[in-house]
Image 1: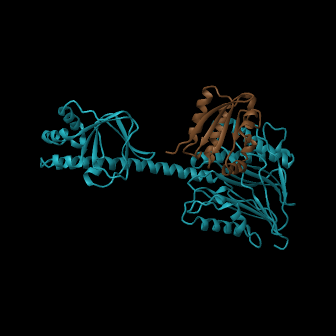
Image 2 (image 1 turned 60 degrees about the vertical axis):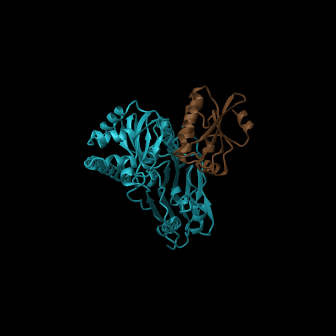
Image 3 (image 1 turned 120 degrees about the vertical axis):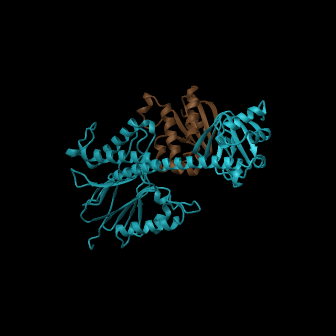
Length: 412
Length: 123
């Protein structure tokens, strides 16, 4: 809705306050003021849109607006400031979107009107040029400050990345008659995926863990360290509120279940407000017999590739961890025979997308997997290469983690 | 920005049940709409919510986090000791969403129904 400002004098006063026009003579300002139009705009109205053509510049008489591109805000404008002047001066498309942040009164001036008024005074162009350059210098300073801040954030993130790397096993323990390989590739600096392989203190069992914390970035990374540490601590050193003392014995299945229940209950209770969860596969392997007991908490089913070509999937035995304190889990079991390979992975593998948005899927893993005659290293490489080839030019949108163990045949 | 369409209905079973029919993808950009709407109806007195997912073609992890948040808003001392929420149930998820629910094991935590009146009377 248009409402005329009361007088040309008032408009001149408004234009004068604007740094962009401050150097202009009264006669030029008067020319502009007489042809400017006033606009009353409600809050949250987009006045100009990035990429669109436009020949109007706007002065904020009262109110406020933000200069932005989607959700990224570049600047907040207030009374006396101008926007839309760049496209007026150089006839290019709008470089940013401007949206009001409160009920605002604007003065609009068309490109033709602006150049006509300026042509009446030989010094006018010089004055506007000075104003534009002054603004440019301010922007350069802002960019410098932001770059310095960004650099500091990047350093912090790099420190975070390095610290997080400590939450993955530095080396995988050597297990007689077994070959183990792992692959971990974060989609961003820090990741929500994790894996772990460690020997229990009180029995010959080897713990195999792979997990995926929901979401990405720093939040997921923080919870990754929590899940991983709690699982490791509770299975190695026992659960404080459990009747089973893991450190001094206890059946493997009890250790497994206690670790899962305690980790789940702790996070679901202490961090209930975060609603952060992880899908976790946690197995305890007896390397002497190939017996595996496990809890699959809402995780992609690990695959056991049998020497005879059959594949067994270890489906879930409970829901994702970290949300519901009273969640219950059952313990599954499987047996690996000599020559068998178990492959665990996170959804960065089966949900990897090609440029058409199609997913790699579990079916493709089964199709490309070649456990026969390959080492675990070679096996992971084959899967990884197939995923990369499928993904093509598409971006890696999620962390990729894979862990494979093979019970070496006697001849090896 | 993408938004969710959420229609609020009221049903009477053994207890009054508020039905939230959601339409749209529940992802990082929209999950808050669901949480806000649930908070609004709970503020107005809703104690049992049936979440109708028939109009949801995609639900990412943010959607599951939102569902957990709603379940938390409804929970009390009695329900926190139960493995399944007595106050929140799901209705009619699409095949794609049902698949993810199954993968994550969310059906362990929440009852899922195909039939509206059966769901309402299950509270």
